[in-house]
Image (cartoon, rainbow over all chains, first blue to last red; front, side, top):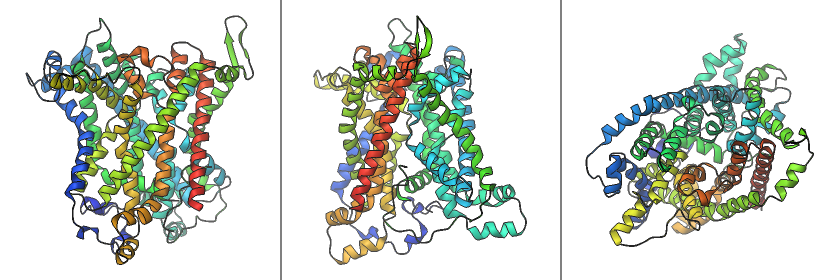
Length: 308
Length: 308
């Protein structure tokens, strides 16, 4: 519904469903309020201050972290040097973790999106025995938090020997009930039944219809689901923490926490500057994804909270 | 049954496409792959954990069926219940604060009275892009007295502020991290729901000379009900499953956080340090069931209010 691929014409307009655009009462006539803006600026500062602090402190050497004021740049500007050290510390550990995270994200989130897309399409456009049961079970699973599953999944995977392999991270990432729900709704509204019937009359096979026709119509929904899945996998912490004890397989999240633990440990080598720089490096790609794909977030959340 | 299907939209949908009434198995071809992986990823671990929870592994006697012994042990386990009470306290205080702030921000951004509204929307949403691990690491440093914000305040004003990481303030400190991470996310849920309120409602209100507060009270808040319900349910699930933040802050004050700060932390500890797999599975199941029950109850209460 709200996810249409028309060109963004100003951020406010992009996610509004087309059918309201004409009728919508025009709020832009209203007077702006400086008082409200001032109050909201407090919220803005609260949201951005820690990120600013991270940027400032990622540009300091380990020694200057402790000797200079934390809220402003001080001493030697060491950001580039920190980045170099972060990338090469302990045999390019960080780069390995980054590569692992990428693999988990690409295979896990990509697979999750594919499964959710065909599943959602199947639920929306076909009638088959057992469909109501499938819907009830899968949608009920939206309420099952992934953290609650981590320990049981670990216990099972250690029994069948999947622990300490990349599959232990990838397989659980493949299922995203919320993604299936979004695709179900999206496919229901975005694909005209007449189109499918016409294709069937022409004698096209169902999978051919899917790949050549419907998958294109489903693309905006797929991007939304992909976005949710990418963020969930990128940020995944508990699952890799329980599944992996081989540092070579760690994703960035677990690796950074290990660096932090090493720094906090009495007698350990403190590398706070690297933890900070690593954190900064880790959030930059995901923030870019966020900013570029903003409108897909909003449409996903609209579908999740408003639709039936 | 489901969290999501409960939320009926405030505006009735225009036209509803009916799925093809073809009683055929073709649909299974699309839904099958998702369902197969679903069984392996979600159902199997739960079943295996239930099985484990019914057994006990003793030094003498080995592995044998124990009936509900693990469950009776958990019922009398003060460590578990202290952790449980802690997350309930967290939920009762943090969730309302966060949601009310998010609601206020969402209404302010939607009000069209804010200067540069898109800037505020993006900036306040941005912390959600920060992985929980990085968020917790960052705030942990900010709270710290070495090179954090608290240390700076102390040196600027020559004060000795209470340490946010000590026994009494740890829970509020964690609450602040979670609030920081999720205000933007919830704000966007509310904002997205506000964007799809039909414009003619506002036109009518304008003709009646309704004040801004009246419009918020009589039009916007009722329309937001399903979104608020969804946000509440997800926030409650999140609080019950609290793990990442206390786990990352653990090295900063091991005595306060300990091994059973939250039920999830406890289940993790039992598996990895205690090797008590059977009992760990029991704790995970009890917590999962309690989470689903509470989420379900909140949803029912919300629905009933909506109908009334």
